[in-house]
Image (cartoon, rainbow, N blue to C red; front, side, top):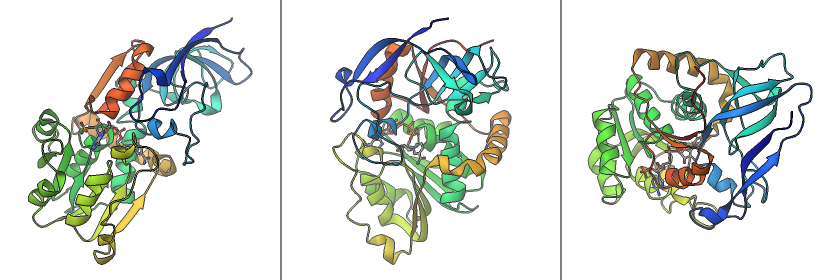
Length: 339
Ligand code: NDP
């Protein structure tokens, strides 16, 4: 059977926010299946910040996207043809060939997904990579313990909204988040149980943080870098811990995001600052899925997501997420979930 797919290629490397010229929609015939392959029809596609630095020709922990090749990223799809005993026709799989409608995937690169009553998109979010990022970053990297006061940036997003709630459920003294609109700030306090939230677009973050934590805080979960990291360094307590998760304020800038000028504060305050990548924390996956799955079932975690529809919406979803149009996890839905 010959299958044609539509996929999105990187037409040129963006400078600043990616625009329509960044992408090319291409129709392409997929190769025949070999032993162990499955043909997957994608159902939901992930939209993640790390994809933006990958559009630059810069060495990092993942190679840059190649010009004139399909972009890739997390996706959940349904197996429609199979030469794998492990992955029969009709099963759902999580894999890395997003940004396209169909893909031929070798079964070692596809994990079966049992929905367990949740929508498929949850396995790209709260029960997927962003959920593990929040869990590993808070409990392992930042060594959170009950009684800690926690500040998290990009707090209304996929990772940040979970960090704040996980900290609260695990006995934080106080949880404060920052976000980019009055609506997001209200959501954090009214629905997600944060003790306070700061709108960094309304006024500079540093004085707001000082007022929110007159006695400082123990843990900063950094999703933003730049002004947020600088402000956190001013107000974190001695012996504080910083989980360096992301630096989204610099992703659309040319070159590598800069560190703040007050890094010196880390010395006198004896801070532990640790960068991390979620995929290094696979050892926590089983525990994370059990704990967070239970919290979701109990309704202890409020989970939000923002969906766009159809492959054509992928570029808009991506720049929308980079500029804050999303609440919770951003993704694109191509097909309804299988019944
Ligand atoms: P989000 O769902 O949080 O979406 C990104 C959000 O970033 C936007 O909604 C926007 O919200 C905020 N933002 C954009 N520009 C700025 C800015 N200049 N200053 C402050 N906030 C800004 O994405 P994720 O939860 O998926 O990712 C959050 C962070 O975590 C990113 O830095 C990402 O790279 C990182 N990450 C790291 C991983 C790792 O393994 N280390 C894994 C996954 C994510 P707002 O309206 O509030 O501005």
